Length: 227
Image (cartoon, rainbow, N blue to C red):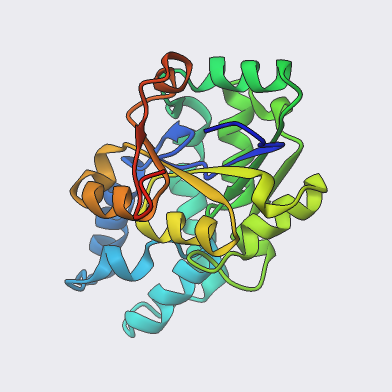
């Protein structure tokens, strides 16, 4: 999996840290506050979108919301900052994997759809922010996932070719973003996206339940080419 790789780039939520559990409750509370009804395709509609794009989706979809994009973003930040600072933990084996990569001289990056302030709060709270040579959000590029923009931006920061990068992602649109960037992708198991597991395996090159599987060489080779 890591042969020939000069950089490893992580999606953050659900891939590097266990945080996806936060958002269904935030959505429920927020929608109740403003009397909004969740569309049937809600989760698929926002999958992979940047923090800003998701706020724009709320403004465009819920005509009774009467809030600006910036107001929506700030309200979400107020609702989640303490959780990201105190309750979000790394995925099993993730910290050991980061240490091993640094020891091998592999460059590390973050390509998250989340807000930068929340991302930095989570990484700093766990003492892992300093491992990363580049931290980018989809709000800093032209389009969110499945567009490749944020992954290409991190590769540019690291001065490495996309083909030399390995991506870790937990949702189908994120996996597609890495593949669209010309990178190999390892799908990561997460409770939130478990219903999409077969699709994740179909799209990705590899699949892991936790980062210890990489150390033990027990990860699954998957994808259409059986890599």
